[in-house]
Length: 207
Image (tube, rainbow, N blue to C red):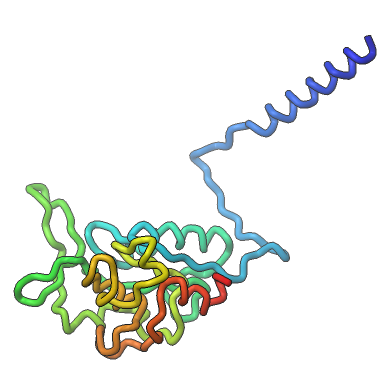
């Protein structure tokens, strides 16, 4: 009898804990609290493809990059992800109208795409030689914390350094983000023929 009572009490306690742990938070009032103490992250980096890079509406642009998955994580763990060379989490921010993946016959690159009521329209275009002026973080002398490249494959993470050896060939986002192609874009620091993985190692994120 005593054994049955102990088992019943144990089950009651377990059920109480389960109910308490399954309480529903108010979804209309989300809160974010930056962590403190010894568990706070000091470094965080990311590599990957368009999902990581914040590619949105057919282009790379500040709006999409600021809402990239890694940017959300960085802010959640208390890192400064602002558009600043002094931030804790730096992304290769690109100014409006953004840089898309379509180059026209005239040497212009389409920017962000949008719906104009009748169909898909182009926000604006940038001439190829003017790409550098759109790269807001191009002069940062170290690799970015977010080196996600739209169109990158899992193989690219450890093998691709420029558009010349990306999969498929010719992905110019590698040149803009990894910055290994000397002179392309013009005036951008040279990162030493390093892959996404190498750059994360250089930032102390991967060991």
